[in-house]
Image 1: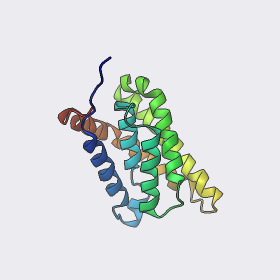
Image 2: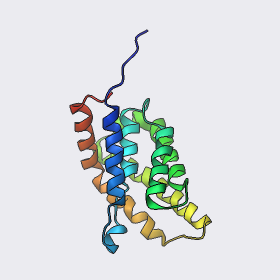
Image 3: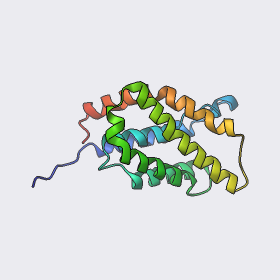
Amino acid sequence: MTTMRHQGGWIIFASFVAALMMTIFPLPGWGEHVRPEWVVMVLIYWCMALPERVGIGIGWLAGLFVDVAQGTLLGQHALAMAVVAYLTVKLHQRIRVFPMPQQALTILMLVTIYSILMLWIRGLTGHAPEVWIVLIPTLTTTALWPLVFVLMRFVRRRYRVS
């Protein structure tokens, strides 16, 4: 039995930090409604690429950081990201082989699930916004997915993250 040494953990961490920074970066009023779900995209990528290293626990932790950074109810992003991480890990072998348009549609489905969970939790707490305001970021996230995928794959290969 051979043991594989993991490397590039700092790249994974740095990508989550960069995504969190892009999530909390201030935008004008109209820009807030179209901001892509950066942390969710990075989580989906790493769950697809390295499901043995990034999974539900990392999704939960990343969601807690988003909760703290945005000052929202502690655990709402964590729950939604854990669900997305679970689904991505379960489907990672299928998603990997999809052509890019079909992969983008899968990302649309995953981010829509994330957005609906967020809308549901906000509704339970009495802070439900308009449904379309919550779902618009799913479209921008889906549109940016091919670019993010190519960039993240380049970084993973360049720094030999395994």
